[in-house]
Image (cartoon, rainbow, N blue to C red; front, side, top):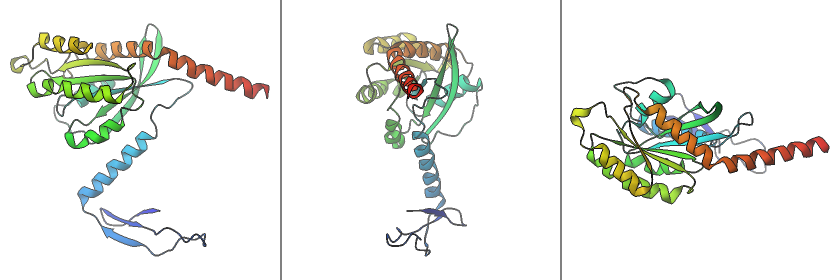
Length: 250
C-alpha cells in the first residue's frame, strides 16, 4: 500500500492494493482529513520505525555499543545526553517525544569505541515505545532527580522492567541528577548508594547543568560494557574474518 502526502497539513492519501492482474496500481486516490496532532504523531512514529532499522549496525568493522538513558520524565535525561554528546546545557527544552540518539566515540585506555546513546521519553504514554528499544542494548543509565522523591521511588519499577527486557550481561548504573540544586535536594547520597547496593548497581551523582560527573559516569559504564561484551564482539569479528577468507579462497 503506497502512502501519498496531500497538499494540506495533516492530509494523506493512500492507493488501494493494486489488482494482481495488472502491473499498474489503480490511479484513484482516497483522501482522509487528519488534524495536526495526528500528523505529528504519524511523523514521530515514522522516525521511530526508521531508527529501529539502524539498531546494532556494524560500521567500518567497528562494533556499535548501544547505551540507553532511562528514568521518569523531567529527571534530566535529555540534558545529560546533551551535556555528554555536545557539552551544552539548555535551561528550557522540548519534552522528548519517542526516542533520540547520537553516535559518539569514547576513548578508554588508548582504544576508541563507537557508542550510540539513546535518549528515551519518560512519560507513561511513551513507555511501550521505550520498551521496544531495550532490544540490543549493551548498557543502561538509569537516572533519577535528587530533588524529586517520586522519581527515586520509581527506580524500583524501572529496574523491574529492565530485568524483564534485557540480557544479564547488560551493565546498569544508577545516577542521581541535579546535584547543583542543593537547596532543593530531598534524596541524600547515602539513600542513592543504598538503593544501588540493593540491586548490585554502581551509583553516581551528577549535574547535567554543570557537567559534574557526566563524562566520568558514562565512560565508566562504557568500560564495563566493553568488558562484558568482549567475547560477543570477538565472535562477531571472528565470523567476519572467516567469511572474508572463504571469499578470498573461492
